[in-house]
Image (cartoon, rainbow, N blue to C red):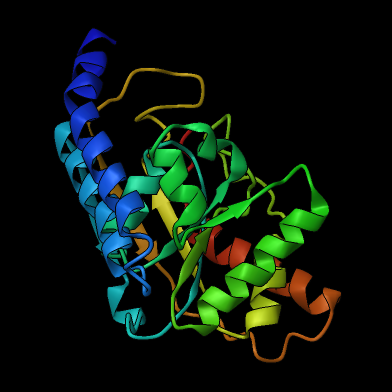
Length: 236
């Protein structure tokens, strides 16, 4: 734990600098490209500092000039930097409101192109989905973790419907994204970060143009869950 704390202290100035740069870029960076570069650079540094390597499979399935809804399992705090690196920073993260309480970094999240969701307020949650639809239709991908929170036992959890409601409204393909070997890096409730080799598997995009009702959304949710589970390694 001591070594982890030393590394966190070492990274704190970089985190502060990149957060300030991202926050300061918001009025001038209309497309959000520089804003997204900041968390990508931060993620690269975080993973390198903690000796975490990311291996990506299935990039040939993705045309990064087009928008997608990436849907991933969620096992660790390491998942966020992992997806930023795996997707070359070309994605907007849907994040929970509580993260905006962090000074500077949280301010950048609140006012930047990433999408905040308040899970305690259904009306605000639906407004967040509408904002995500606008983001996607402007040509930018988003990523969601439909389990709702990190797994507590290393197993793949049931999905919540929000990501698939977003898919129905936006009409862009959903990409199942499996992340393996992050649970042991920093399990929920732990403060120790361990070295690891992470594998990210990008599945083939699933079309969503014909989703017309709740039953179609639930069917899509099941198909995506199965696609992620197919490659998922039980990490308990």
